[in-house]
Image 1 (tube, helix red, strand yellow):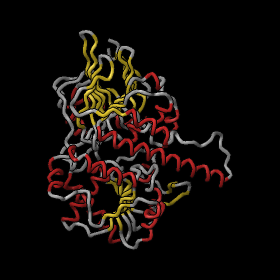
Image 2 (cartoon, rainbow, N blue to C red; image 1 turned 90 degrees about the vertical axis):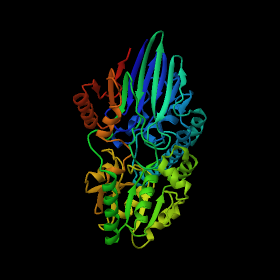
Image 3 (cartoon, rainbow, N blue to C red; image 1 turned 45 degrees about the horizontal axis):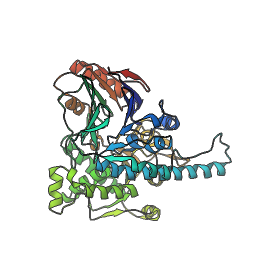
Length: 468
């Protein structure tokens, strides 16, 4: 049995998840994500170490851009194999990838015009990583699989997708490799969700695995509990309302926006916040909401009960959905406080930049972060306390109040990751800690080794290990 695992992304970084599994000459790619940190974005243009047309299949854990966003580029470079994922992931990935192509086209045109206006000469043409046609070539390759149902993805290789509890349709993937009388089991965590969170079911636990590839986004910190989170959320909204500013929330369209609506519903029904206008200024999030309503079978029992009683947690009387650019711009003419939820979650693109331009210099407004901010992104810079930030080619002084609520995260924290790994009844041969910033990944690997006595390693980018 000849088994090799290469870490082609998300190795001591948070984004760009790509793991190449080679089994007796067959190649599988687990996730195919884009880099989103500024300093790493140039890697999106670098070719894979192996030709994409030599990859037999992609196994996709979920639809977030840092796990799926490089797929059209791979197809453009020659990949023609199947992309295995759940039905909900396929539906969401279509939205995510088309939106990504659209934003790239818009950003490319914006940069071209700015360079022309500034008289700047560039060494190379500014072009998008991929376009809408590349996405259209990618979508027919999706192969939808059910949860808990093994599927043969290569000779002697069987993959089973299990509930991850991270976003709608997200999975952990168990890969069983058989050669002769030998067998090895690899467990890819994807992004590990959290227990007792609204909307989705809890993450799946596993009794055994030979090798575990586990994410570590929040591997060096703990989240606040749900009760404290609601109190803090209400305080931010009420304080900003008293100052007469807006609450601007950069939010991922998938999962986080729906969870925000769930909690806003709870606060409104409990009369803990005033009936403020709530804007979802993200066409992608609006389309994602439609996918959520079509896949209610993936919800937890509490959410199913609410829907059965016609009490949708995603609907608010003061909710306004902004589909057009005109509706988005009109928000800035509203007097008084509004809650503005817009993408992207790390402020790397989309309409959130437009709202930051209009609010980040206002001391009465609040920029509220409810998700992970990679250090080298606009969101990460604002969260870190940078006094002057560059948005759409212009510099703005940060005068708005900056707040962060980690409890909204759909990623397991350090103790929750340990809880997930703790279900294993015997030590795995090796745990590979990925999908975390360098310091965080190494910290969690050390924590795991100290607490459990297991072999734990945070692999480097492009590192290859022999598993045979």
